[in-house]
Image 1 (cartoon, rainbow, N blue to C red):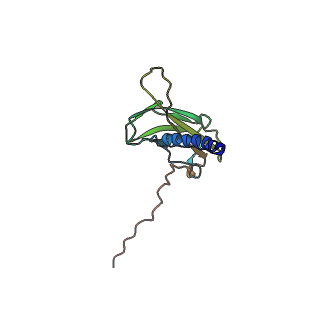
Image 2 (cartoon, rainbow, N blue to C red):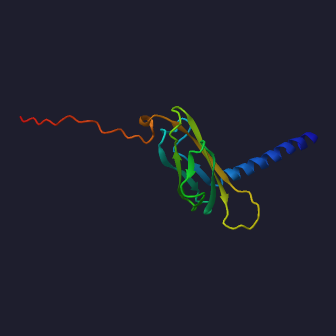
Image 3 (tube, rainbow, N blue to C red):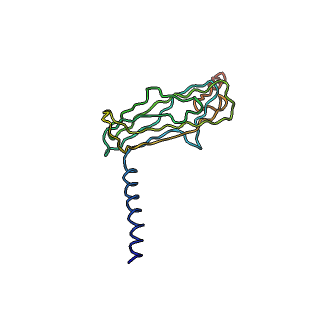
Amino acid sequence: MENKTKILGIILPAFLVLTLSLFLVSAGIGVGTPYWTSYPLKMYPGESVTIYLNLQVSEDSPDTLFKAEITEDGQGIASFVQGDLYEVKSGSTLNVPIKITIPQDVQYGETRTIRVAFAETSKEGNGMVTLQNAVETNFPVKIVTPEESSDYVAPPAKSAESITVWY
């Protein structure tokens, strides 16, 4: 009988933790980025670009207001373009613009990390503390030559003069 009590004492808390974890995972929010560890954003010194993170709320979740925070800004290179509050309608995706500017004095080959967190928040300030969902993403920014930049467009190739052949 004592063994059954010990086993129940282990299984029941594990089951409760697993159930709670599944509930939080199925909360229906997510954030995506077009860059990741093996596919970094490549920028050159002096370059400035705006990228978009995709903030998504599933159809089974209500409209959600998020407070965004850049928790790691790659040593001052990242900032929000449109403030830090974003409302996402149920079943939709919102593009969140982030401006990244590389200083002129950065060395080629450096890699900096941008980390952005989105936490659910409410419009009402009723003073209650509630458990809220949050998501986070990060991506590297690699400093490269202008020709290696993610936004680099090669100049058009010089074409040979056209030759007309009559036969």
